[in-house]
Image 1: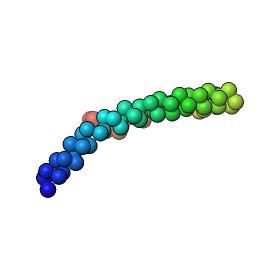
Image 2 (image 1 turned 30 degrees about the vertical axis):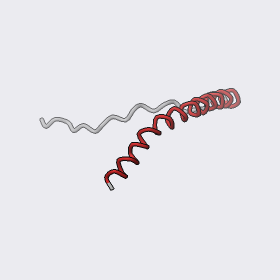
Image 3 (image 1 turned 90 degrees about the vertical axis):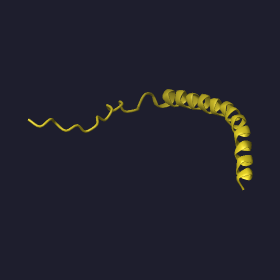
Image 4 (image 1 turned 120 degrees about the horizontal axis):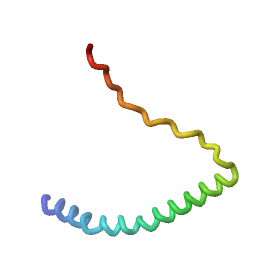
Length: 65
């Protein structure tokens, strides 16, 4: 049983890098298409996004006087 699990993990270890490198090109195409879409939308609608809100600050209790 341990040998079977070890063999399965070994196969995963072998194939995962190929899967990652195979996805890399697809992700680059998606990013390029998203940038193109954002450019088209900004030309059609202009800059209508609301201004970014400030980052929320963590709660800090005041020191005891």
